[in-house]
Every structure is written in structure tokens, then in C-alpha cells.
Image 1 (cartoon, protein in one colour):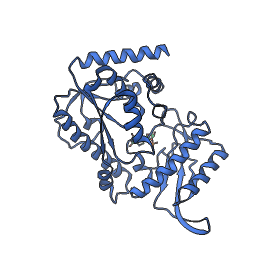
Image 2 (cartoon, rainbow, N blue to C red):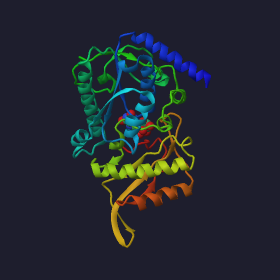
Image 3 (cartoon, protein in one colour):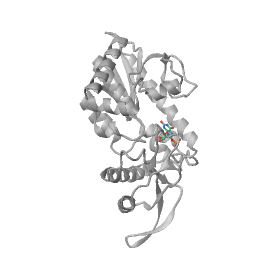
Length: 322
Ligand code: XMP
């Protein structure tokens, strides 16, 4: 729409002014809509004086890394450094089952990888600006105020050298989520990216109850892709806030698949409706849709022999299982 076009143009102009004719900026892409829209706006403003960094931690859902590496780059022309860090993250997560410990490790590794990239980018000249996809609700929640930050404080992880400080560029500071999505459409971003449901930074790492391994991630990615596909096909994407699919990797149950007895893992479907993720109710997904998801997952994902539905509201349950 013309109003959204104006909002985008104004934001781009403001970024251009803030960064100036020579300034350089960096931005960490997460695969999520906020960082993607922020990066696309800054790219419009300063072109390849922006460098984006995408740390692929190997914990994304099916197709998401490709969306960033191929579709997003093709549409925006953004200068992107991709770091395939899956091995590193998996190694750091080896043997870890505690949810908070998983979060800490993933956050810490992310910052280490990002700081290595920063140093490489700084070798080409100074960088004064860090782009962040902060939205208006985040600004209100944290009491306003802008200023300087580094990636460490952004991720709330301490214990790292304080030598990489930047001015923040936050082109989405005045926007709500739905406006960000419309701005993304205006900028031509892929629909799957713009309409992506909330997804936690630690990714599938906190949707495997038990140890995170490559094999388990592959299983969960397949099951999750099937659930997403069927919910989309049923036209439920906009009704459902998000639908985590959780692999209970430490649980086995007896089943019968084909001609034989199996001893496989259950997956949990956790569809929720919510306004802001602070509270949530379980979504009343039609039985025939649930049935299709269950049939397909147990047919197509060999090691999964049971699909269960989480019917807990928040509170007392959180949306994620870990
Ligand atoms: P919970 O599980 O607390 O989730 O009800 C509320 C919302 O936050 C997301 N979530 C996270 N997002 N890092 C994130 O960026 C995290 O560690 C994290 N944990 C939960 C969750 O997907 C839901 O939208």
C-alpha cells in the first residue's frame, strides 16, 4: 500500500542520514522476519556498505537456511557472509540435556562465531554501526532509550571482551509486528520469511527433550516440515500463533508399523493461539488436520511411531517444552 511504501521510504532515508555517506554497518541475520526486514531496509539505504552475517547453527527448520542464503540474497542483493557452524554447535552441545545449559551454550557459541566474523569484516576498514531488528513493543518493554551496544549485551551473555562497540541502527523501532511484515512485503521479501511464525533463537536445540544429535535434528526437521505443510494447506497459519513440534528423544514406546513391532519415539504437537506469547491457549485444530499430520509423520518419519497433542494452556505450561 502507499502508506507502507512511505513508511519504508522514510525509514530508509533516516538510516541513510544516520550512517552517513561513508559509514559501514553489520547485521546478524537469524532467519527471522525482524532481522531480515531491518537488513533489507539498511541495504536499500547504504548498499554494500552493509555486511550481513548469517550463522547457521544447524538448529534451523527445513528450508530456512536456504531461504536466507538464496531467496533473501536474490531479492535484496545484500552482501552476506554465511558461516556453517553446525559442527561447532553440535560439539558444544554434546551430552547436554539441561534446557538452560543448552540455551547458554548456543548463545555463547553464537557470539563467538559472530565476533570472529566481525574481526574479519573489520579488516576491510572500520565499522561503526550494528543493525538490530528492535520493534516498538521491545522499546516500550525496555523503557525506551537508544544508544550503543555490542552483540554481547544484545544476547545477554557476559564474560567476553568489550572491544567491539557499535552505534545501534534500529529501523523498526516505531513499528509493530504486523507493520514489519507489511514492510517486508513492500521490500519484496519471500512470503515464507515475512509470515514466519515465532521461532526461538536456540531453534530446534530446545525442541529435542534429551541430547541434541544430528540424527535427532534430522528426524525433528522432517516431522516439523510435515506439520507446517499441513497447517498451511488447511489455511490455519494466521489463526495459530505458532506450533512447536517437539521430539521426546529420551522416551520410547512400542508400536506396530508395516509388518513389525517398533520401539520408536513420540513427537508432540504444540499448536497455540496467543496475542503476545505471555499467555496462550492450545489451538482447537480440526481433527481431520491433526489426523493427516499424524498419519504422515508416522508414515514418513520412520523412527517416530506416535504423535501426541499438547492441550495445556500457558500458564501453567510454557509454549516451548524446554
Ligand atoms: P515460552 O516457552 O516461554 O515461549 O512460553 C514464549 C515465546 O518465546 C519464544 N522463546 C524464545 N525465543 N530465545 C528466543 O529468541 C529463547 O531462548 C526462547 N525461548 C522461548 C517461544 O518460541 C515463544 O514464542
